[in-house]
Image 1 (cartoon, rainbow, N blue to C red):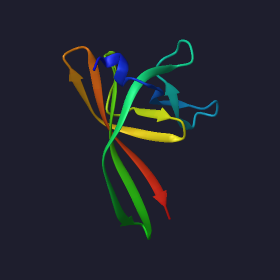
Image 2: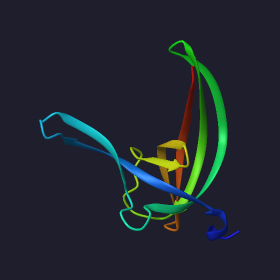
Image 3: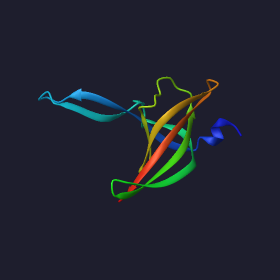
Length: 112
C-alpha cells in the first residue's frame, strides 16, 4: 500500500509558544505549525494500545497511537496533533527513511 492510501485523515500540528502579555505576564498558547491554507496535513492514525489507571481520585484512560505524516522538518516531541476533538501528545518522532514520520503519541481522556 502506498503512503497516499494510508494518509486519509486531516490533522493539525501544533507547538506551544511562550511569550509575554502586554502587562509583562508570561503566557503560553498553542500555535499551528503549518501556516498556509487550512493549516492541516494528511495523516494516518492507528491506535496501538490502551490502558486505564486511577490517578488523583479518578479513572484515567490513555491510548497509545501511531500517527503517520509525510516527512517534514522541525517536528518535535513537545508538539501535539489535533484530529477533530481528539488531542494527541507526541512522545517520539521516528523518521521513515526520509519519506514519512511516525509520531508515537498518547491520547488521554479524563473520566473523573
